[in-house]
Image (cartoon, rainbow, N blue to C red):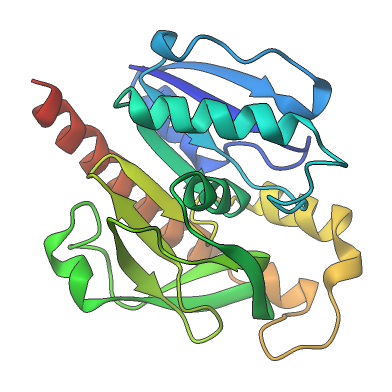
Length: 236
C-alpha cells in the first residue's frame, strides 16, 4: 500500500501513523505544503493522510497552498482513495465535503475523553473502540459533520470529534497519533495557546502519563487496521 501524507508545519508529522505504516510494510511519501512542494498525481497513492496545523482552513490569503490542497483532497475522495484527516486535516475534509468549519466554543488542549455516539456501533472501524477513550487534543476550531457522513465520536468540550464518510474517508478532530515527541513539539511551538480555560491543561499534566499515549496509539493502530481491511475488502 502507498501512503502519502500532507504536512502543514514541520512539527506536526505522522506520529504513530508512521510507526504503524512501517510495521505493515507500506510505502511512505509526503508533501510538505508549507515548503511549496508539488502535490503528486492522485493515482500514485492508495491512502492520503492530511495532518494538523495551527492555521485555519479559511487562511487562504496567508497560506495560498490551501486552495490547491483542498482541490487535491476533493480529487482523492472522488477517485475512491482512502483519506484520513487529523485535526486541521479533518476540518479540510469536512469543508471539501460541504461542511462548515468554525471556532469551537472552547479551545480543547490536553487529555480529555471522547465517547462513541450511538451511530458508531454500526460503523467500522469505530464500533469496537474503547468507550470512553482518553485521547490528546489541541484545537480551537471544529466542523459540522458533512452531509452523508456519520458522526462517530464526541467529547464534553467538542461535539464533533470524528466522522466517517463512505466507509473510506475519516476525519479525527483529536490526535490519536500523538507521541511524546509530538506533544512536546506542540507545547514548544504553540505555547501562546496555553491560556486559562476549562479544557486547557498545563504542559506538565500533558506529559505526566505516558501510558495514555501507548493506549491511545494502540487504538489508532486498530482503527487504521480495520480501515485498511475494510477498504481492501471493498476494492476486492
